[in-house]
Length: 388
Image (tube, rainbow, N blue to C red; front, side):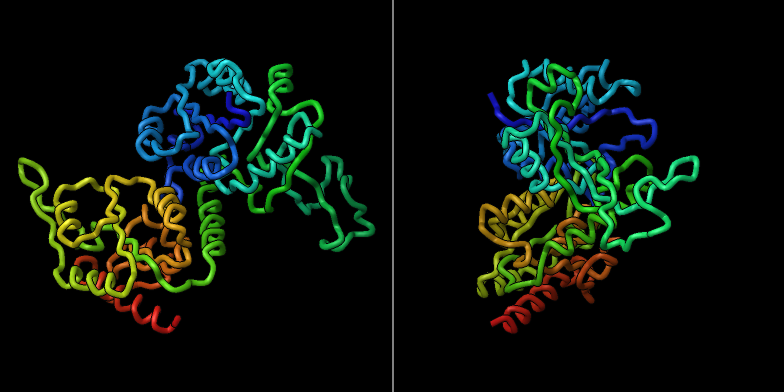
């Protein structure tokens, strides 16, 4: 039996925002943000509970190496517009025969949740002081009722913001309960209720289409803040199409025929290795032509068919004991955005898509397939010389 589990309920249908859970946020599906953090936390088991075949396929393909992750198919009757989250939780609990000590509800609509927040909630519940724990945000707002009465302060002696405690407000991110409380009450919190506080920006949940715009800016800000100052570059991580190539593909009746690669980029990669910088390729494509080219270039760390590049790179860095501040990431399209924002140097070819150009640290002079890689290698070698 898993001691501490979490469930992330994902419903296929969404009237407010069609396909909401699958909608891309910085090039990643919305649910992947909280799922990634849950997998990084001290939870014993993380369950995706969904009726969405696309999500099931994506999760099965992208996170198959994560032992603590499991998919449970959601019942049709608790995946309707009128079904409550509690109904889904109760049905899920029955499906796993209530085999847990604590259950945590994590919401995909709160993508700013971190593994540290999850661990803090688990620590509170494991203290034995609480039957359930909820995540809150301290909001320093002055509240009034419909009759014109100030509720949480005296308007005649308005406090300074720094002296004002404000209110603790639910942010909808984390709800943790011991099994007995949940099974007895059938709801996510009850009994003796404790709480953790999360940063003010986590108050924003995705309920409306415009919330994606706000959350995306908050995620960008957080990723940039977390990466720290760039250090000595130890690895160059590259996309393929639009980086090694100009992004064009020739097709015939039998499928993919050709891609054009620049020979001078190949020579640059030899120079990179001679200077003890690891070249690495992570691409969403699964092309035999690309595999053959990477083999010719002797790039041993080439990974194909990767859709969630941020999660995949995170796993590699943990395995190699590398920091994102030691990585140069070279990409050209939206599925590279999370890595471009979070690595020590996020770099793009001159002809990258506009959103990538806007969020890169450096826009190269050269286009993809036209010595963009050679240009970034020169940058790395010069940067490392200055760091010595």
